[in-house]
Amino acid sequence: MRAVSFSFENYRNLQPGTLLPDAGVNVIAGDNAQGKTNLLEGLWLFTGGRSFRGAKDGELVRMGEDSHGAASLSLTFWAGGREQQGEIHLQGGRRRASLNGVSRRSASAMVGAFCAVVFSPDHLSLVKDGPTERRNFLDGAICQLSPAYASLLNRYQRTLQQRNALLKDIPRHRELLDTLEIWDDRLAGFGGAIMEERLRYVELLRPAAEAIYVGISREREVLGLEYQMTAAPKGREPGSCREALSRALSQKRRDDLGAGFTTAGPHRDDLLLTVNGAAARSFGSQGQQRSVVLSLKLAEAAVLEKALGEPPVVLLDDVMSELDVSRQEYLLNQMEGRQIFITCCDPSSVRLLEKGKVFTVQAGAVTQEAPL
Image (cartoon, rainbow, N blue to C red; front, side):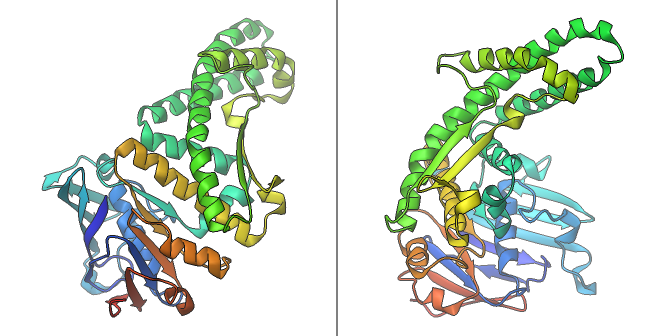
């Protein structure tokens, strides 16, 4: 899977233009606030997702009288053994999309046509922040592999909210205590299925992430991943996670009633990340933490590639800062077999690139540098 041609008009601060990327590595260089990240964000929209920067669609249109309050993006890409065409039109805070000339009901309906994995500085929260960020990472990655997983998450969340509401009501209405077992059974069913999916995914992710981290660190460090559960099963037989969660809910019932919320389940689990056996969150340097997140993201791409039968496009925003020269060189020259877009501010990073294309962005104008 690769982008062949990417055109943009009235998008963010970008001047109207067309990007013709290399099939391998593409470096997008320039000072801060020139529009480098806007290019990656525009490409990401073709995955059917929202802006990875958290922006609303209405904020993506370039300000100015000549924009008429509308922006358009066009992507020619190779996927599924053929060349395809995607169009996105932004106006009035809404997004319309078409694929191969056929209008889609919504932009999210394009999910699965063009696949990409993105890293941005905000993703460092995977290591730096609490368990919620790591759970969201696992759930988001699994959703790309299995769209039905999103429905499972929604059912679990609704059941969890209902159980929590009941836990708050029981102290005032003791007659409701007998109904708690019904919600425990439903929560254990949905929660056990989530735990099993996460365990399977971590087992797929671990070898790829560990191998990538060894390459990034030039074999100086070792990455570890472990899915930590508040209701760990005793084995891996089918249904063992459901049984473990059911048992934990029963054992923690008194604690839950006192707290007014559910203290065990996949909503409380975590993904432990270690470097040389020490927790990356507490003991990792800035460069190590960035390398951990990069390894997770690139491993996500590797797992997705096995499922799709072709590699997704990799978008790496501001990835070079905090990395030493050897780690930069690995990202630029050792990630073969996939199309990569990397933004950077430091011109010295560009000189490390052995083959590929270099584009510069200044005041929203995109220019391709002389071939390497």
